[in-house]
Amino acid sequence: MRTLRMGIVGGGKGAFIGAVHRTAATMDGRARLVAGCLSSDPARARQSGREPPWNLPDDRNYGSWQEMLERELARPVGDGPDARIDFVSVVTPNHAHAPIAGAFARAGFHVVCDKPLCMNSAEARELAAAHKAGGGVFAVTYNYSGYPLVKQARHMVAQGELGEIRKVIVEYNQGWLASKLEDCGQKQADWRTDPKRAGIGGAIGDIGSHAEHLLRYITGLEITQICADLTSFVPGRALDDDANLLLRLSNGARGILTCSQVCIGGENDLRIRIWGTKAGLEWRQEEPNALFFRADGKPEQVLRRGNAYLCPAAQSATRVPSGHPEAFLEAFANVYRGAMEAMSSGLEVGRHSVPDGLGASDRARHGVPGHQGHPELDYPTLEDGARGVHFIEKTVESARSDRKWTDAAFVM
Image (tube, rainbow, N blue to C red; front, side):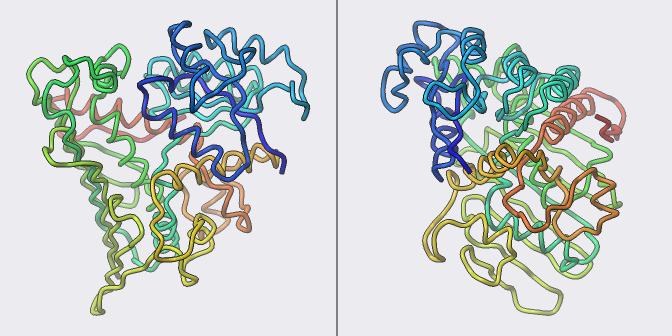
């Protein structure tokens, strides 16, 4: 597998997620950053690109993403030092995802896009058409699916160790927006609370979409109906900063999804609990190297990352021996690794949130190829991103509606 050439759009000075993407993509030596447009402002973009940690060459430090696309397309395809990029990572605010990712995808480049995928389902359909026309890999960075013990939880559910799933509670609590931080010039707060740049969802779009994907990824279940209550607790805030949802799932199970950015003292408290007819399990992002399994009538088991008793997917997602903490950046890198494996192999696989261990008929029903011997071919796809956008829309629709339940079944 040759080293892939990476380009990036967004993520320059003052951004958090750009450095995360660069670190994750290059962690295993499978990619190197060679080009970028690091801001929507040309002067700021070039200034960021010249400075550490980016250190982009002058001829590939672009002032606009349009310039980057045009000039990279003019470069030869191949392995030479002047060859064009293999893939682009789109790490801009949400409103810019669709035009940038769509243009690169249609031109035949592989794309890795931050979540949420785009602003609405109409844009998601346009991205799907661009992706089909270009034929490349399209990944969406729902990075929590990259944790080894999340993959273990998914495996245990698929193997029937919990029995039939009855109830799921997933929550994501933060406190950083408990005051009107957007009025203080804080860059991340400014765009995340602006409907023109963030979309119709505030907390539900920013972190609730992660919770929704985590639920689907582990359980393989779809959300069929939503009863939502969205609140903007901070006076003058245009988007929700707190969300509470009742869910009905595709097998008849019930769910609760809650997310908030006004829970004072909350840092990045993402956690999920799942109960079936035989057992329950629990995973917490702030203590990610432990998975709690509670079988009926038996003592609690604590499974830990890095041990040989874990499933192949969990072992494949692990880089260091047990007892050594491994977390956010490594999980992010696992999403990139799956996408880059697909880029290099010519296979757009993904998992479409279907757990390992399902029978051939179940996998076919979800449109997922087998590739059981390749646990590294596991990454969130454009369809996962489109489902996330649909979830945000249906949540907002439910919160605005007088009906108790809103149908949320997804159709691409």
